Length: 281
DNA sequence: AGCCAGGGAGTCG
DNA sequence: CGACTCCATGGC
View (tube, rainbow, N blue to C red):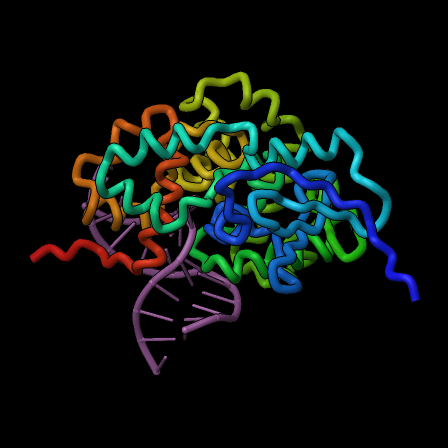
């Protein structure tokens, strides 16, 4: 019998490591359903992604990828950025260089604002694998099916009309009402990506923090991962430990303008090495 | 069994 | 402002 081959797009992605990039805690929307094969969605798009050498192969179960989608994923994976020169800057700092060396294939993704907002509301006081589970149940239970078996995040209007009890299957605990508040504020136009994009970072941060369940850390993650503010460095528990023990001077100035990207390497390094909190006597 | 997790809200001083 | 508590859930 004939094996049908589906069109596959190859994106040049020199130095990128797909597993590290998707698994380093910046996105929770991808599932490795088969070894090396990541099923995921972002905004209105969904693909199966795998890595072949220095390329990312993207495949859809039906139909071909058009040019618009190709450029969408190119931007999503930040393939237009020069990470070689960026990492050269980072590596002038010895400790930061070690963090980069732990997973040099990490790229900070440019994710959709709404996806990122929901994801990091769910992230508070939570484990990465469990966040991914809640995100999966949120999308498959309330979101649109974009590709066969791949669901996107539910639209703000979809969530806005629900009650907390409706979200019980998510097992999101006390975070469920936070999702609804975010949905209502976005639906009402109280918060919008366009509005935030025009604001200076500190102002956008305060605007995000008016959403229930969004504090400084979640707001910073949305700014960095969902609004492309690469200078924003979210302060989570691992980062606080890493800074206290290994970066007494704070984030190196070698990372100016890209503190958030530098910090993603620090985050991964700290978590992988289970950096302990600084013990005072 | 208990501790912890890409925290935040509420309260008290 | 800072410190302190509670929050729901499940992996380890």
